[in-house]
Image: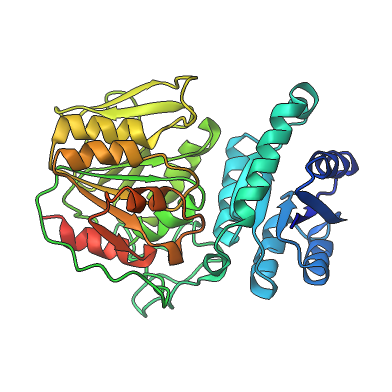
Length: 373
């Protein structure tokens, strides 16, 4: 059965071009178009598409507001189109926080110059997010305790001032069908390494906001994301979390309570002295940054003292790196299927029998705090 798509954009050219590209795939059917967020909500309710492609800057109602309404009224996987700028990154992260599943750069030149590449990328994204876990689209955080800062319109927004340097954030409710692996054993890990892709920005937010400011281990993060986005994403996480978060730079030193995010378009490795190496992105590799590269370097440098976590995402990046870590005696956790947006990367870990534990997304941060001495 064909994947039904609703195309939303205020640009007539872009609506037509996206519709043409998608319609050329016999397994995709464009069932409607909309020119603004309000029309998008009405069409989503009436047409019940499998996927919605959404621009963010539109008259009457912007894309982020439309995504929030759609997730409340008829949860549907949304693919956002974004500009590759710092502001575009900020808006895209807001859209993902509102419930969008994934994003693609909105580049008119690429559509003209590389139509086949754009067609392949767009159709692959549509097919992959059509299979996303709809339950994960409308999971909501638990109410904040009285002592916590007042909520804001976006959970990525800067928290209200509080007497402590980094405010506490309430954990979200765990899904009813969470995995029930035993509670983790405490160990003096030298490094926590987390890899993720589709659904990862929100998943990392859920995990990292549960960690205390005095978290005892250094953290490295690998999120499949363009170069223009990782700095903005690290800045947002840093504002929200009690630990520190920054985009990794060559020569950065690992230290407890600091999470280093691999820069987009490049590769991140760690060495036994606790230093980070940032290398150019190898064109032979599908992912830049690549979870396997970072995990593999951690296996070489820290043997059995690594706790690696694989979160939601397409494909199998992280599996081979996890295999090396496992061979050295390190510990591997995977996110459970019920809480994943895309159960690809964690599934690869589980199917390869590499997972020491499988946890719900909303249990992972809590267990990290419990596991690290």
